[in-house]
Image (cartoon, rainbow, N blue to C red; front, side, top):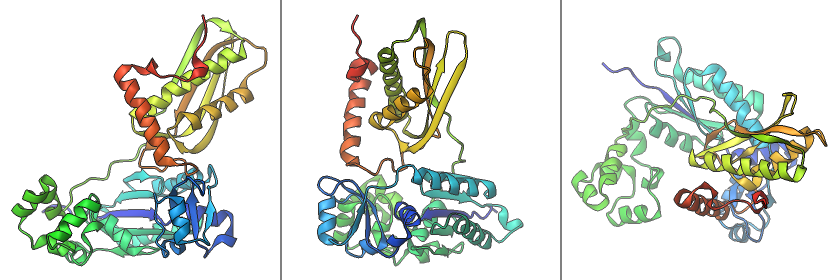
Length: 384
């Protein structure tokens, strides 16, 4: 008989807003929008008070302010989000036998086998309370027999609650929920399902699977299986991702600061491209300098998770200026990006994220097609 699975999904409620409230308790209870500028920005996230007015993530800021004109608009506290995310990660890592960090504010925990020694539900309640006590962040969780049901249970438990779907009760739990509770059911698929008379997840179970396949292809079969609460996704063990680095040992020692900064930009641009190809974001930047006598020094700083050149390069330059001994020739210069995590993490919240991401995608597409040096920063171009 297969072992009973227990999967918990933890979600830090309105994480970015919650961090802002911790930094400024006077904001508690107010409609808050975190995002870019009022004129051209987009909503990154918002408080539950703002959501009551219809404000949603990815909505243009102008639209959000028409819906909720009294909202407090914030561009966010840089660095604080990474700090709190790491804090929660450390608490979970110290307790959970196996966990997966899927984004800056979401975690899956595999508690399978723990039922021999503990009550998995009470254990998860206790861990949630420990996180709240230490960080003061609100957190919700769902506990179920698989990742899909656990995540949906978390959504149903919000805000700041928890829900256990007993083994064997998955289908009953899902049946009354709207079909767009499933990830992958976007606006167009939702409209198509509604036109087929499918409104709830329970409606899917009563629909012939062959007809679903005819209308939706393989996704129709997947949707039908999911409606019964079936899901076999595994919790991927979390490992602190390895760093990405690049360095250059010069044939002749260099003391020209303009040259060194140009090289620093080139190295940072290079590894930022590699970062995006690996679908990672970095939370730490390190600059290394080696002098002719082989003395090597380095300096690092943590940053808000990002994958963008224009956010990484200024940090590297600032570290260089703090580290470099003026007038001293340099034998080696290097840059390393570490504290890597998946791109499900939300990066910078302070500009029009979608527009900038599209720009970097276009740049990377050109580099992949014509070579990494086909597009480079003007600052890295040096005359002969």
